[in-house]
Image (cartoon, rainbow, N blue to C red; front, side, top):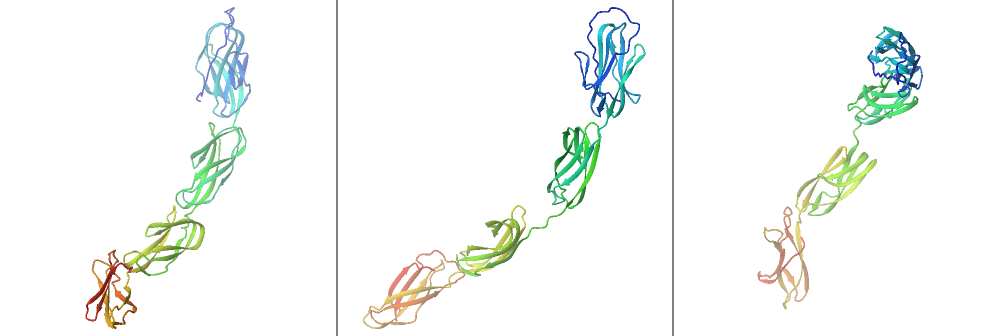
Length: 417
């Protein structure tokens, strides 16, 4: 057996040689304990029953003796009468002593009946030793294993509570042969909470937890099971997407209603990938209404609404189509009067310019007007609705002609489209 530790100490010489002895006597005192006081050669914590893993100290003491010659000795450790190990050879010098103490220690590796003897190598004498007993702890027991959850998502954290009962000592906790905890106990029942993470793949899992006493190896094991399931995909659904109008004028405001159904969470609302809203819910069916403006350019358009769950990314999208048209006509309302002295016929002309393409106009038929009577005339100028209105100024003009197309009056300025 391997000696874990050993030490030899010798007492204090009190007298010089006063005589000679024909032989070396056996030690008059042999004791076991938890230590040795090297100042006066006494045992500390004397006892003869030890727990496995404790360090055993042995004291051998000669009182009022004189060694008549030098001799070499060893402390020899036995279990059930079979030698297990011994210390290095130590010199015991000749001389007159009031007392002489020698000591040794060993961390005994197994339970059983043990003894220590002294081997006088020089004289071939083996001094009978003293016995002691080493007992193994009687209790290393896992009472219960309780996971905080038995059905988990992949990679989800959980806590395993281990109920235990142990004798005094230091203990390691292993989870499937991986150490996850260590603690020291004075010997009692208790609980340990161990933080763990579920495997990353769905399936049924069995884990073994082992509670092992440090240094001596006594242990107990238990198993527990968990189920790892793939979580259901959260409901994120746009049920309807309804625009209040599908044909709009340039820049015209309108509303869009989004009907939805979602599970609990936080959600982003995106219009053509630009976020326009966010909200949190405990899970519901509901509606959101948004006020939008038509583009300024005539044409056909598609808007896409996306409802996206924050952090996890589940989403649903719906689109609607609409058309933006420019103005189809411009109405000139003209107030005028005949300043002549007789009733006459007149032609009125209205012209409108909404782009760099030039003026667009229309003339009225001959219109009869009495002298000095104010008249109101409306002229509708058709324009091309597929072209954008450009900021051209002046954008309108009015002309009045007589029946021979002689221009009599002229006005120009800006009017709204």
